[in-house]
Length: 130
Image (tube, rainbow, N blue to C red; front, top):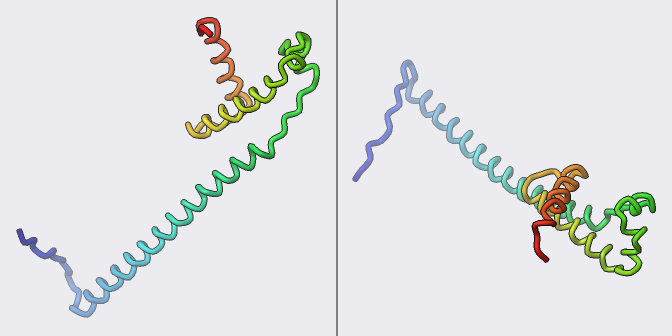
């Protein structure tokens, strides 16, 4: 099926003016196409930078806990850390996973959001059979 060519209504334009107008449109369309391609390249690079920054942020993060904070959790006073040193390492891994999953879900991994996730997990523990 052959398509009909589009028609342009050009009141008052000479043929030369119409050609100049069309050439201007084609130039602008080519520039727009080039800029959209350039934008896509920059967005991809930005996405890679965000991923790299996130990974390095996790590697450089340092959490300093005071004995009072640990005592509030009951872990120090009960000697859990001294008898189970792996728990620090496990908690560190869990925290990284929670942060990464929040980021993946486009949720800011703030202290409040992480505490909320951990509270939800804590609340589900009695119903969870180990």
